[in-house]
Length: 449
Image (cartoon, rainbow, N blue to C red; front, side, top):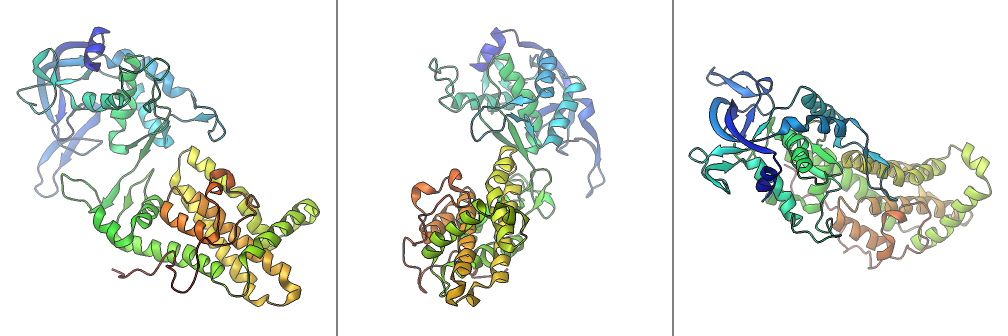
């Protein structure tokens, strides 16, 4: 359907095509995108794509072309201006079209070199497994034209109801892709949409690769990890945490089970889990009382003694200041988007809270005259757990539900808007008994290799 509409609008024509073609990448590359390479095992020299390293061969054939060059100026204008994002409470006013910025610049550079018309079909005698061109059985539709248009198929195009064009999810607020398919999604795809007078995605988020043995994971080469084995061993939430914590956005990241174990023991079990156990299982304090009294104390310090509080460098002030600013920091990272840096920031507050609790030693504040100080310390530690637990829900939904249940946070008080110091004064009584037999939030791993 889309191919016919592009043809009817004059965007498609037939001609002989010559160029460097990669069978494995299923695409033609211009001369500027290939280089001489050598097989380290055999010493054989061959031409390869600079982008993927895959071998290319010079090919000459008759096929259909898309007038990509005619859209060069329009693409350049779109990429050069600041992209206006949808307005709203939780959206920044402006976003870059491609994230991270380094890949945005790469795409702009590629476009500025000059775009050639794109071959969008292959002879069916050489490529028989694809979808045939509707009115020409001798040609097969180029896989990327077919694959990209599938996004619109999911959005019910061209059968959308008037006034409900966005009901099925297009245009996407954030289109997530891997760095190796940037050209297809950031040049060809916007061009197809422009040719059809359709809206472009609001933003394209490009991520780096996971590597195994210093090589990109790939099903075709067998360099993969069975995700079900990892999930069965470490749990879904643990894997989500690890992948977000170490996953590369700008640069590739190495995958190894030893890294998962290290992050689990230091961040989840020894960091977050340790803090939860110390706060919720402590025998010298009452969390509900600490929430009520501690919240009042913090408010008094903020309202009546603002000057003293601003000048203070006490651990109380340092942690409360960090908790006040955490929500906005995370929002800024998520708007980039940079979920990895957001997660590192949240975990930084967890480590800071552990250090705060250790330095304040609430177990030594059992005297009646130190009751207010004890409640303030436990309140700030509990608030840190509550706020971090809310903000960590996108990363570890099941574990954070367990944590917020342990703290007695109401189901309707677990939204982003609730992740502020002093926002919730009604929690502190667990939704179930936290005893010795209760499952700990992050138990020890059964194996360490």
